[in-house]
Image (tube, rainbow, N blue to C red; front, top):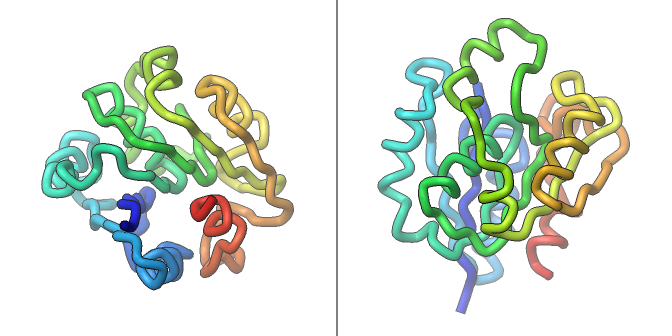
Length: 180
């Protein structure tokens, strides 16, 4: 029997962008279910609105494996605080707090409220991927995020923000880790 995966895009993203369509196809071709909700962004981009969209996927999310990109790991942490129990979370270019880009910081502000790091750290297993040249998430930020969750941190050289703009329409390293 296959595993349920929830693939969560970030701000300005969608389920058909970057490496998400490729990953969904790869997982489904191996007999797994991959849910790729489309969250409102940038219009309607708020924690409250994302939680409303996610409610349709809630029943398939308990015990699922989560893959979240960019701002989406902060969203997943809020879900965990509200009782979500994922099997494992794989966070790509994760951050919590301000990026220094005023427009992005304003859009993400509702996602950056207080997190009970101790509670979320004990609720799942975590793996974080970060790049040495991410224009939004400095290495120190990604490593701090991983440390707060007692996560395994994996550096990927030259991956930028793991987006199609930096050549990330496929992510074989992530797929290999998901299938372990």
